[in-house]
Image 1: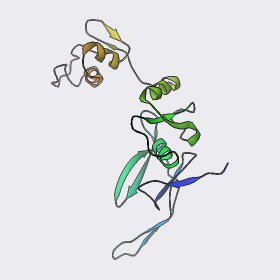
Image 2: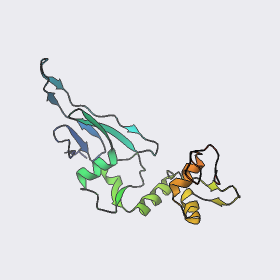
Image 3: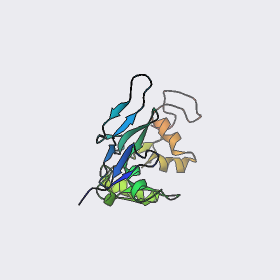
Length: 173
């Protein structure tokens, strides 16, 4: 199978993405005042991996660098823009496989099911100070009538339930 390359929207003539999940820069000339033009040879970019095991690349344009998730670059180039209410899903190849055959659009619920299947869902149980335990911050938040971020923040001991900064777990830990 041959590798198909497409321009990355917003970075035309600078970067391309392939259906195999690879990103490359293209040969280009940068005009510089006083010191002559700078000729840059295109190269394959080496992605980094973030905490939730997504591949990232940094793309530069007009002196501004921005980090992009490779799976989004692949789907935007080959499938099109993500429809409202959907997000990019990884198939059975997992989150490190950014080939076109492993990517599609789906709901957040479908994406979470994929993460549970792949073992990349990092929900942790939380326990209130009165001993009540929940499978996740989301479950505890539903029972407490608050947002999961508030539960997570208390578990990290950054804020108290009233919102002030404190190093004690105010009810959750």
